[in-house]
Length: 61
Image 1 (cartoon, one colour):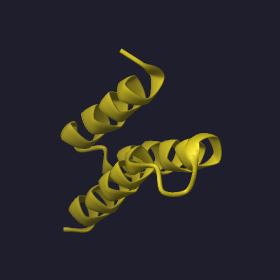
Image 2 (spheres, rainbow, N blue to C red):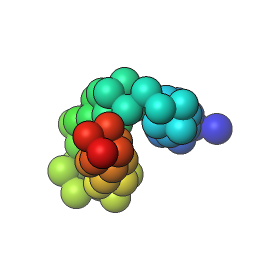
Image 3 (cartoon, one colour):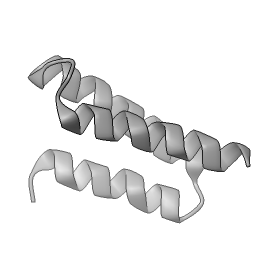
Image 4 (cartoon, one colour):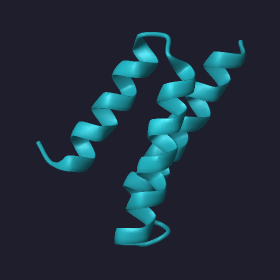
């Protein structure tokens, strides 16, 4: 498992545990790092930011 996949899994686990703030933080940091290393429009960065938005939405519901 590569680093990005494992970090996405870590954020997803936080989200599934109900720790939405931590999940959003992990997704956001990962998305920014992917953009810095692989370009603004790397689909993995977009996936990470989508996860962040989902976590924020779940946390405010």
